Image (cartoon, rainbow, N blue to C red; front, side):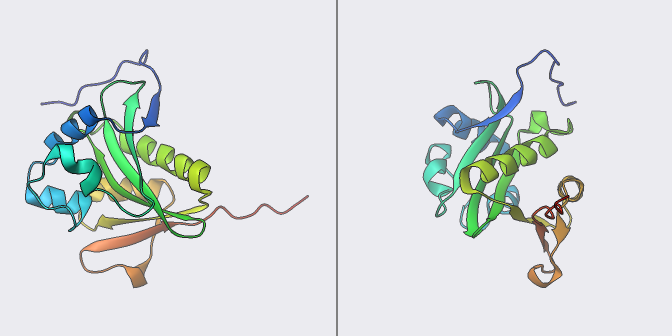
Length: 170
């Protein structure tokens, strides 16, 4: 089935807090144990009850968001939390199957970084991605993330987007 396209007259994409219906939808996007592990990490066991996702996805200081057009259906889900001062860790980034292949991953990540900057004063960002997740790697590299070899392993790249260089004063 081809991904559906979103009409250009649609409301703009934005991040909003997730609602119960969003968690129910999210539950349908993760259909097996491998997908669950790769998306949410080892703390979330498959199968899970989508109604329990708000509690199951809790992390200290985590902020959860849904990508949508206005109050509409969830097109993606993402989180961030602060691990060190000025650095937000982006995590649990996933797009609805019908929203994949439309360039929305870059938009979701850019909106999440803007939200982390606004909410937590983040100036730099980290994330982890499976080495064989080539579409995600392309998105992250396109956004300026670089691999941190000493924090990576044989399956997962640890990546960092450094804080922008300070501009010299004229």
